[in-house]
Length: 232
Length: 285
Image (cartoon, rainbow over all chains, first blue to last red; front, side):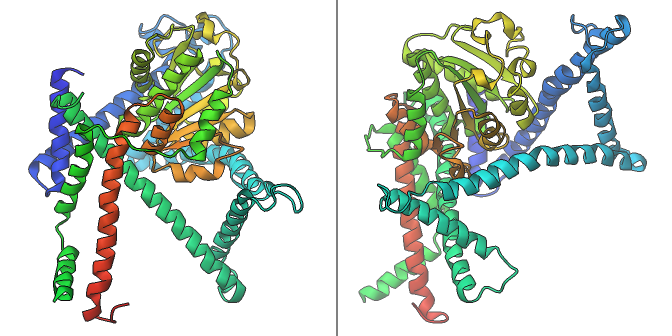
């Protein structure tokens, strides 16, 4: 990184961290710069990494305007009379334009069609995968690994761990089972379920704290090493 | 008398300015950066499994690394990327880099440079290493690679057709990849690699995750995910097991100091809460 870039990075880092003392104009300025640059970066990134290579290059629009030497689907179809499967990107392009119709109040309803397409395909893609990986495989993993009674390792810690997982799964599921009042055995299992869920939340919280500390370490390392040269 | 002063102290702690806590965290994180402190970092079975899977690969194996994160997750994931590339150099792995996040390819180039310095030798581009860059489409990119990798990545990061590189000879789909290492900070990431590569195509997938994401990946460990390094601690364990101690191990000292401060404050705050609420309502425990 250039010296100028390091100084900009350091000043912006200090600006954002200044919020820890209290809200101030310097922080607001840094926040606004971050938001503006992020929006601009993502716009440019999506244009050059999605629209241009996926749509314009494949269809041959960039060839038409002289930005690319390779023929696209339009050149193959209308120039040579050859079918090019990339012509299907035209459908995606049309759906994309339809999505932008949300910006026109009177034609806003048109955007529901591509949205329905996206929702439908996503649901279709995920339905089978979630069912297989998150339901069937998980049930399989929860039940399958026990060492059978009488086999070597039956009384090992591993079997205890699997038993703990099984109890956690069943108790956790009971807690979210609302068709029966949580009383008696169901109530007891639900209460155990709460404890498992609380342990899960605790572990997640612990990991989150570690993550946030890591980010701060990264920033401090940048300030001390690259900006101030206090450490090597 | 002593009880009175303790109660006063605890009441004071209840109303402590949060900026004092920030300052202490700042000090706790800063001090270890200037002092060389060695600390023992126990290795977890998840990271052991991750490294064991890599150890069991033959020298020269064809591995894929997907860097699905951006600079904001660099402190946690970049050390893992550097360790992976250094280990790959030592074992002569043929490394194919992809990114499901736009900045992934750039992160890979930076990690590669560090790894080459550390290992004292360089990857030969197109022979030992190739960067296929970013491809939009999230999980659908993974799914498509299951049938054809060249169809999804016809050109590399530098715009060159991939067919000309020796490393890509014979690489049609996941069946030609020995191992996939995923570094993930969210969506798309490890979950998608499990759902769309490990399970349907039986790809061997190991992962390094940000600490925030790691707990969600634990259920997949074992059959679906062959090892997991979670956060900076996972990165440090990864470095220890590969004998490539680096930034993550060094940073863990600061982590420990900061965590100690946080735990102390949690204990003091709870004691203060239970001790001081007695006079207000309901009585002490």
